[in-house]
Image (cartoon, rainbow, N blue to C red):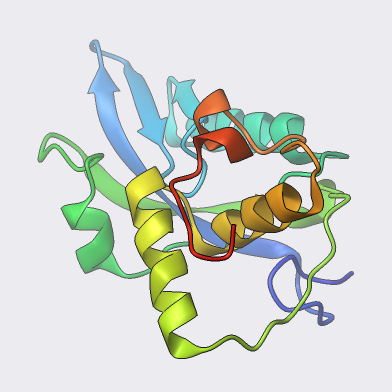
Length: 164
């Protein structure tokens, strides 16, 4: 099994952060910053984990959607819009072996300033560097953003960028 992040053979179970809040007396809601479209719910942590896994597999299996690496820096997580101060952070194990993406990993060496511009654009769009580079490549090649997510992530929504 090749991992989604480096193309090397490793374990397929990866821990992703989830922000858990109560929903009523006996329900939980979980938001995953690395998978913004996933809103897990359950009556227990185990149900919450299963709900998150089911949604991630449904959104990514067989799709041309990037499986993002997990955000593990707690200062970044706590500063995110998800952390309302009303919940807790924990990490759940996601079996990426259940997800087969049609995306291939490509390693690039880019000038430092170009990477800074890409990071600025990613920040403006609220997406990862990997997804930003993917969208820029699709835009440059004249392909629509297949499976890239909401319409706001379509190439037409990309801010002006020097290479476009």
